Length: 96
Image (cartoon, rainbow, N blue to C red; front, side, top):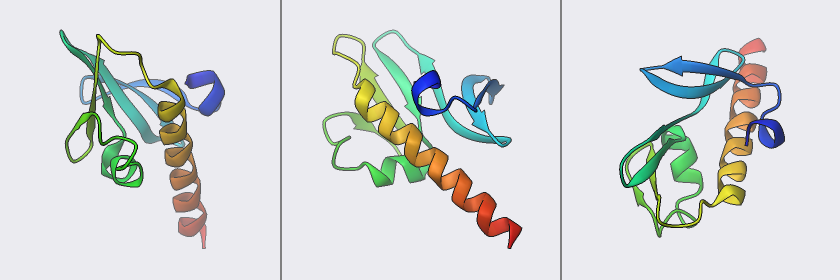
């Protein structure tokens, strides 16, 4: 994910969770739990991929990937790329 989707991003800890940041804004958070991997793409990331996430337990900005299932790396990459575009667009709008 890091090298393919967000090579210019930086590793960080935010809200006591590992995260990747781009231009000082969080791309995604993640965490390991006993039964799942928590992936936090913020509400916008979840909303944009609502159909593809329908088979996973989700919250407003959270996704639970069960540890007994194969990780959907292609979907994770798509979500990270979406968040990169969102941050880039927000930065471009802010500069206007």
